[in-house]
Length: 549
Image (cartoon, rainbow, N blue to C red):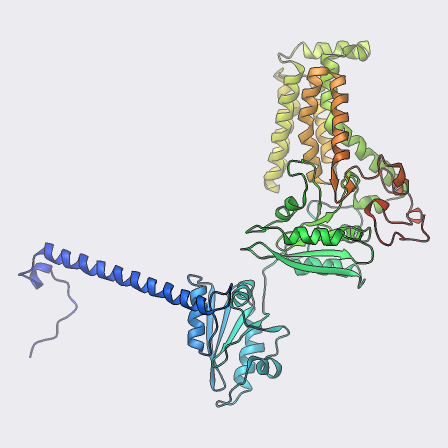
């Protein structure tokens, strides 16, 4: 009797002495080719079967569910192939076989165990059967939100949202169970719109939390919330909020139609929606107010505005808006009216400085030095005599340094931002003067311009002001103060022509028919005088406090 061979490795020539190495390699190559051909045939058969199932399914559906749970499992696995984070849990539900399909990380498995698995395994006899899914949902499943789903596309979408899928052998319907669990950031303090008084809670990236923050501030049943899914691939939930008995007639329909007409594959941030709501795509001024503060959203809703909250984005949009809305802060309503009015007026002065101060400096130094007192003119001339560049080039150099400094501060981590501030102060404030690249007065002008930009309550609005400083400088270098005046007129005309949902971007600043709105414009009157909502927004109910103006 031959001894059994052990697991040893031998040379090929020792085992097959009469076979050549080349012939063996040739046979191995043929075998690999046959294996590859079999894989291609298998893939072709899978595609043919999938096409056949799709042809049998209704229009727009990838397949159709059957009464056989093994077949349904194969269909789901095929639709979610190479998705290793999809989990499949088989168990017995009475006499029938059951299958749970869920997305790992987005599904609360403990909730599934208590509301589904324990209910189906602990309350049923081993020989018990079911008639349909409605019987299961009515008598057995204890989850709060369950839905019988017939369309496979809805089933796949619900799984990817974090809901679980329940399939029962012998039943062709599928059951979607709401068991979603998201890892989310807790509600915290606003990072970009902090206030000295007032509430400090801010939106996070979860739509349900953000809607709860709004609902918490008002118990009004006329506050309506409509939720759509935008993005053919991401299917991002987007909520449209408005107060039904206040908002201007037709405004909700117009914005709703705009949202539904957005044809895009992904919606990741609020800016993806905002660009589709702007009527001028090259306009540098924002046409929707982005805010992290729920109190600001509620205040806008009760003025007759509409809010849009996007899932996965900590910023909500409010529209229609005008220039005045970007100049207001929550602190304006927590301070005394006189102090708030002075602060708000100073912001408009800062707006003028942020755009025109460098241009005024260049025009006076280059074209109109006679406008200055003799002592100041001689002092500026002495400072400029030490620098080799013309005033326009000096201004552009400092503007470039300021822009780089601002971007560095914004992009750096907080631990390094302070160090970057010290370096920027040395470069902009000291080194360029000592190196005789620019004069000290221009450094003061640019620093004041930057501070004026930072004083804007809205960062995106401040960015637009930074954009207009460059053409203002060019106009001043060509025509001096006349160029600055012409550019200011052109800018005002442009803002007057800019409209968001029939509202002028300048609001009521130059409209005498809207004099009632001036009480909460450049200045803020006491609350007892703010008896009506802004007329320019066209609300159905203008009465806010007391009688109509």
